[in-house]
Amino acid sequence: MKPEFQLLKLEQLQSATQAFAALLNNRPPKRGWLKEIREALGRTERQQAQLLGITGPTLHKSEAAEAEGRITLAQLRKLGDGLDCELVYALVPRKPLGDMVNERALELAKKEVMGVAHTMSLEDQRPSDARLQKQLERRKDELLRGKWSKLWRP
Image (cartoon, rainbow, N blue to C red; front, side, top):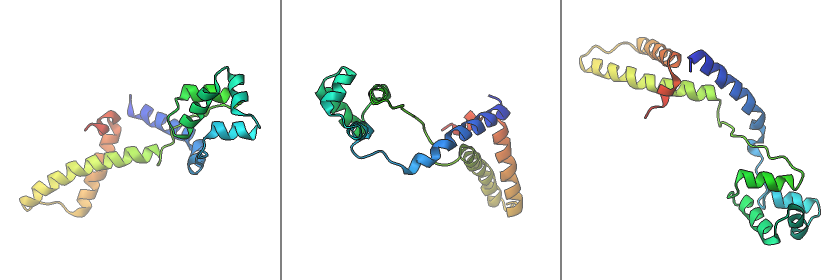
């Protein structure tokens, strides 16, 4: 993908995930959403299981699986439907995606530029810090104008 389109895609995705960032500090209830919502509605396990067309022990296991983080999204969606709830799913970046890409490009630029600077130091030809900084910025920009997939190669 061309870098300008990659940047546009990154910005659009960052905008879409930003709405979920406020939820990062809200953790699910210890006993899970399924159980908490079911109980808040005043339904017993047996009543909820009948409504869903499953057995009580199956519902009990599913609620425990959700509380322990072992439930599948498909199962959670189905059980949420039985509570008249919508499953909302998102991966929220811990920091802006653009920052991740810029940091990676800078990291690679440092490896390259500082490697050359070290070799030049051995020959007593090390460039000034100001010159190294300019080279770092220039190399970082070059990397960002190229294919971003190359930034993540091991």
